[in-house]
Length: 80
Image 1 (cartoon, rainbow, N blue to C red):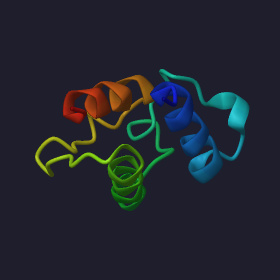
Image 2 (cartoon, one colour; image 1 turned 180 degrees about the vertical axis):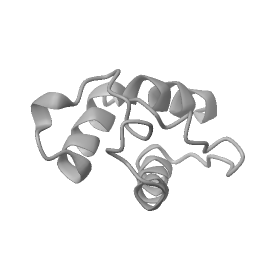
Image 3 (cartoon, rainbow, N blue to C red; image 1 turned 45 degrees about the horizontal axis):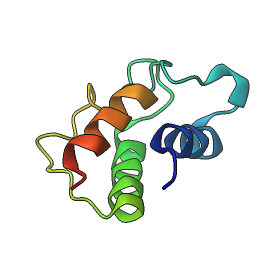
């Protein structure tokens, strides 16, 4: 199984980061302005497809998507 943390970090770097070295597991993605609300929707869709999960809209909050570590916690919450 893929390491969720690495997969999410690589996706965020590839899709949203201008300087990949600036993005770590704890980098503020939304509050730091790296990921906007439209990008958050595509990130949610990527996670749901990749991990075959469904993240309820009420759980897909900016706070839940604000770092790679927080995203990993969210994914694990909905994996079976």
